[in-house]
Length: 211
Ligand code: HEC
Ligand code: HEC
Ligand code: HEC
Ligand code: HEC
Image 1 (cartoon, rainbow, N blue to C red):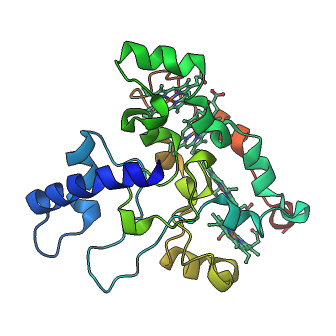
Image 2 (image 1 turned 120 degrees about the horizontal axis):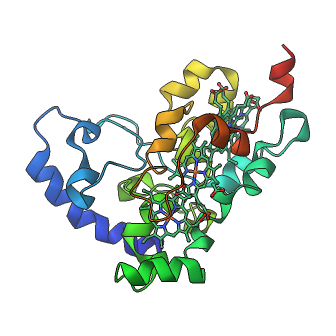
Image 3 (image 1 turned 90 degrees about the horizontal axis):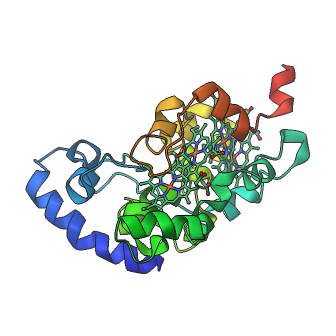
């Protein structure tokens, strides 16, 4: 399924790149997704088009879980697992989702870009930015908010210094990150209140709070 939607993106991204990209322009500026889906990019590494630039891949929550499940650091993985984000893909198979989809003449929400774009990790990324370990079923995973992890998770790059992490693709999310999906394009839109919604998904590290 993942392969299927990745494949549909190749010709689309290519056509748009030819049409939009000027020499020296980056994919982020060229807005591959804007041309393809008529909407803002939902998630993207923002990696430059420069062939020498490192490609940051989405590797999936299981890779983050390896370290981020310790209670002493707030167990972000366990916190995330309890949120609706972890169920965002499953949700697309519910009767409620099917009812929404029917009105929009969508046969299967779990296969429609119109729904997947806010309900999975790495949507809109180029095929080479998706690692085989990423599973669509994880829903809205860590990397949706923290950036594709293939480089910064290695040998604890991001754990040694925030600066090193940021250079390797890590993102410290803010309200803008949320608004990519929590907006009126959502068929079931609920008024987004950053302070209130942040509390529901919070996973602070108690060790850092003490300092
Ligand atoms: C090899 C172990 C390891 C892996 C794998 C790992 N992390 Fe971390 N990460 C750490 C440690 C250690 C810290 C610092 C202590 C803490 O905040 O838990 C950290 C800190 C962070 C921070 C806070 C950075 C800051 O500057 O405040 C974020 C965000 C983060 N990790 C996200 C992720 C994501 C997302 C993944 C998966 C793509 C991941 N990590 C994979 C060990 C790891
Ligand atoms: C919906 C967005 C979202 C998702 C999904 C998400 N996070 Fe976060 N994460 C945040 C926000 C917001 C912060 C706080 C950033 C700040 O310090 O301003 C944060 C902070 C962190 C921190 C630093 C905590 C601290 O107090 O230093 C770590 C570590 C972290 N996240 C790891 C993860 C891991 C691992 C996952 C997946 C299991 C994950 N996050 C999923 C939004 C998210
Ligand atoms: C990739 C798109 C995406 C991003 C980015 C995103 N979310 Fe979400 N969020 C969703 C989806 C989809 C759901 C509904 C999942 C479900 O019900 O299965 C959701 C649900 C939620 C809910 C539960 C709402 C309810 O109905 O009870 C909260 C709280 C939330 N998100 C907070 C945040 C915050 C805070 C951020 C930013 C730090 C954020 N989200 C970023 C897609 C996203
Ligand atoms: C612009 C991003 C976006 C798109 C596109 C999107 N969703 Fe969602 N979806 C969300 C968010 C965010 C939530 C959490 C509730 C909200 O909108 O605040 C959500 C929640 C849901 C829920 C749970 C309802 C609830 O009350 O919590 C269902 C079911 C759902 N979406 C189905 C769909 C279907 C089916 C499609 C495709 C036709 C779709 N979504 C497209 C962002 C999106």
